[in-house]
Amino acid sequence: MAMRPIFLVAEPPNLVRTVELEFEWFPGFSLAQKQRSLRALHQAANAQSLAPVLEVSTKSHQPLGVKLSAFSLELLLHDGTRATVEAAYQASKWFEAGGPYTDLLHVRPRDAKRDPRLRTSGELKGFNLLGKSFPLVPTSMFYDWLYILALSQHSDLCAAVLEYTAFTDIEFNPAKSASTQAHACAAFVALVRQRLLDPRAVDAAVLKELLLRAKDAR
Image (cartoon, rainbow, N blue to C red; front, side, top):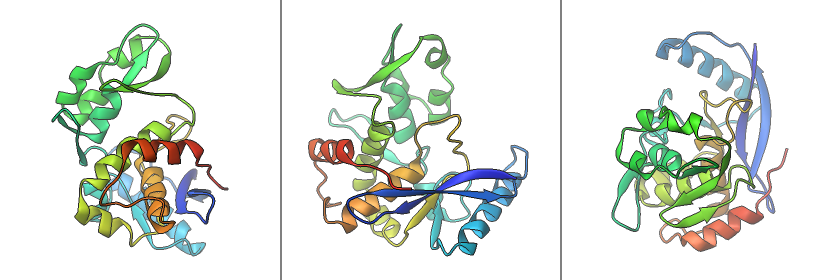
């Protein structure tokens, strides 16, 4: 058995509500094993009436979930650079002994995530994307900001994701990672539903302030 979070669109003044679910875990790294675990997680969500649920990862059964993966979703930066959310996130990390490693903007997302410099440059101190600095706290703020900016550039995906109220990421383990695309999707839907954000014209500075003030509910 395993425990994993599901991220729900929260009622104001919160954006995201997190619920921990216990489900049967199928060990292994194959797509088939990941999707068996995913089905079990969604069955646990359905048993608690937490549907409709969208898995947001490359392991999703739904094409929308795969397109929304940070490994697939692309962001056009203000300097004209185009990168996946995952590559931009890894390229923004700065450490006590190095970074940000902006060359990672131009590599495949899996290679960016596995770059050895991210593990040999000391303690993570914050994020800096093209001269814009972000703190480590709130924990998921920078990742959510980056992801929502990218999502807002894809009107078809924005419209599709608003049909859901709950999101999972079978690859996310809160004991090992601080941020996930599933949380970012829930935050985006909440911001739009609460009329705090226009998905057709997202202002990066306004979005940053909204996420700095946001708190999760449990």
